[in-house]
Length: 167
Image (cartoon, rainbow, N blue to C red; front, side):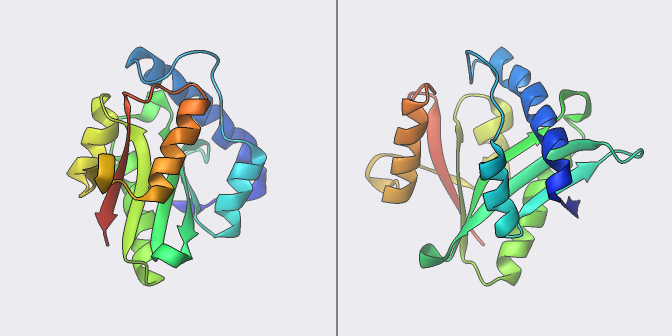
């Protein structure tokens, strides 16, 4: 895992668009494929929390972007994607672990994310990494707000969930 640079943005977006199809097959998304915007990637980059996984020939095959939420001493995992040709090899796990290690080094106390609750490579994957679903009254307001924004973008609110993990 290496830190991404702005010149990696196009390759990162290509990975995300390819991974979209895996999510579509699982029923987690529908409609036109979308990738993170340059502004969203810049946010991760500004916090120095944009990592990429490279193939042997230095092609971007996965990425993870996060940002800090200082008032909560929290790392928020915004996006993690691995190209379908490279899924199932532990790349996503290594990306998430690297970000969580970085968060610990920065003194953060928890990590958060939103994801699809039904696709086994989403919520189930994060549960195996120590994340816990936060529903209803147990869902922090910031995460509930993110879930509402996702619903407004067309993601099925019945499939979405918030998760947190202690660091």
